Length: 114
Image 1 (cartoon, helix red, strand yellow):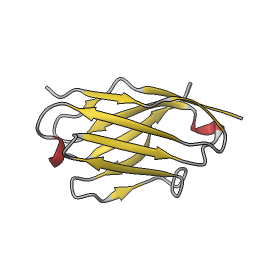
Image 2 (tube, rainbow, N blue to C red):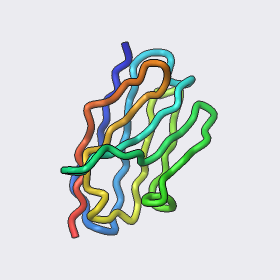
Image 3 (cartoon, rainbow, N blue to C red):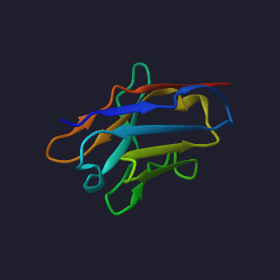
Image 4 (cartoon, one colour):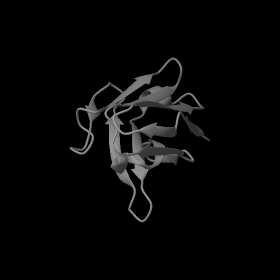
């Protein structure tokens, strides 16, 4: 059983930065695609960033150039560096491990004030 624990959320002013972390249990981390998703109140959960086991990344246009996903396989941790944040980035951010069986963390709240 894999557990994912997000941390690093909080309150930040528009234009500011936050770094989220997601620590994974288990030994399969390095072989899996990891993703960050977010869900704002009243909206569907959406993809924020993906990183494959080989380090390839993918971002939607809404965060491209502002957010960076990275991973440290030795620490079994995936990170999301968020810069130039906007009020519309306010959401609960979730970490996901992809694969035949998907695993989700419980999320961490990010609030961006204007």
